[in-house]
Image (tube, rainbow, N blue to C red; front, side, top):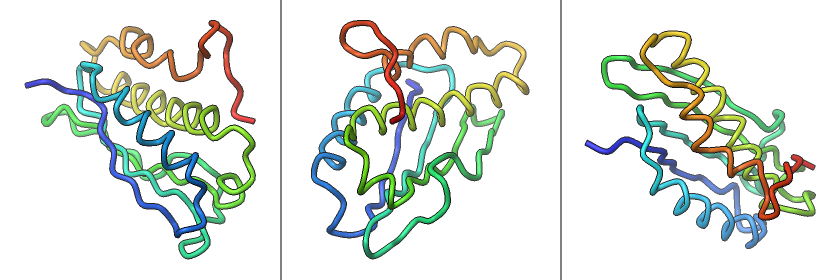
Length: 138
């Protein structure tokens, strides 16, 4: 059985910029092909005009299930961040990277056979841009 990164997304309304939706779709496709030691399942909530997210952007409710080799979390994106960020790609990639890194750390804390460094290396592209420099969250 191939394990990897999957996520479901809820958009907070029609005001979410199309760039956000397109970048999230591209990101989902890039992550789909990466084999991981655990299933990493993210529920991504993108704040908008109908479902407003006022909490800071970040990970919520992280859980690790050793028996099922699964780690799950909710990733909330603050409405003001979504509507005001000048570079949706950098914002999305660094936000998802932070969430996955947190889950990898949590798995590593509980599973001694888990290769956390190897898993982090697989997702490093999320914070390194096309010319090899680290991107910022903006």
